[in-house]
Image 1 (tube, rainbow, N blue to C red):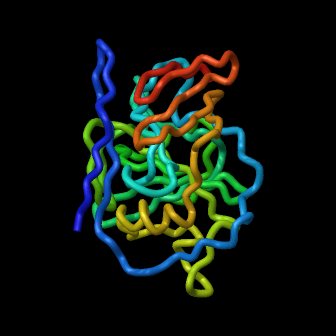
Image 2: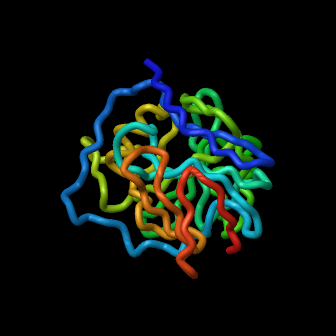
Length: 237
């Protein structure tokens, strides 16, 4: 069974674009959420997943499947089309039958994800710095799903203290998501390991979710300037 979620079109006069997130095939297994209060370390100082000095469109804040669950995802389509690491860490390639997608482990359990990228530039286990090129925005569907308009589906996760598995050593809870369908990732795994981006700051912008999927606001911390999402804003680092 394949479910499709398509987010709103983001437009401005000189370059209309759209972005989407969706799902693939369910695999059997179960992750169990740990007791309340188990959290990762203090939130890191992240940049945004592209270079400063340019505009980006964002389709807004949404859950990984664009329908239900924790809103741990934001879609971005920066002007230069290049996705970059927002913080140093260890890159991992998550392998599926139709290709790879990228995650970065930043320490203290924090992980970020980058789905739909094309022309991936990093290798599995590579140490990256803030600003390292990861790949290009695209419409790749390595583990299933749907995409309308090139973008990066940027997600936030924590691997420490938030989930335990039904077995003593579950590779999913440990962060090995090879072969995990997008439907399972955006459902079961996101429920256990996904972290809401609501109230989090990336690159000097604070993101707050709205009542609906693909909405919310981005507020520049330095001066309180606010953009309603979906929308466009400038990232100056």
